[in-house]
View (cartoon, helix red, strand yellow):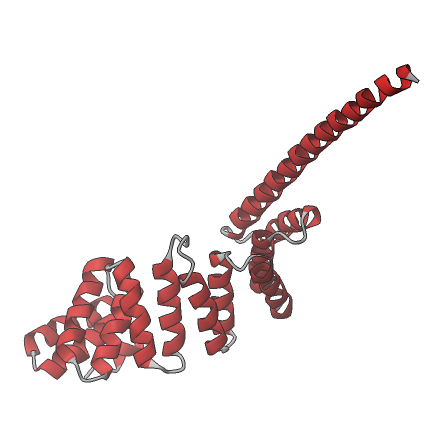
Length: 250
């Protein structure tokens, strides 16, 4: 009996040791699988840039085979399906991405852009707000800009203006926010602020477009600044002679 009693603690201790080794091995394997998912996600995103959607889809499918619930993998798969114009599948993957990790601000922002493109303005702005509210999100200016651009489609100019102002607090040289602030101010009859914003836009981008030059012409015309108006008109005609704006210029 004494021998048996002596062996029991030894057996129990062995069980604990084996359990620890097993748990440690399991954690190492889980970490390895997580890293592999991350690698496949990065490869998929990388292949989307040159337009190799076939390879992007292959790699993101590999990631989801390992972990079907990974938020970022679902986010990237949603973008792939979006580019492939399978909008129902894209929506499904976006919804899963934000459900599995509501703090995935990139997925929230991307889903917002997708919804805005589909004409679902209010739902899109909700997603942008979720991204903006995440203190760890690295590009809040982008989400604010996207919310403003989406609201311009409604149109809800006053709401959009608020988002553009917030975007400029994070990035004072954000071209999209500067240009649309010029548009909003001009439409509201505030020509002087409109001029300031369009000048800031030109300084930030160091380039122009037919649309931005036409807006600048209208602003200077409203201010009665004939020389400035003529200068912008000359640029429009010389740089973009075939544009609808140049053809319609009076």
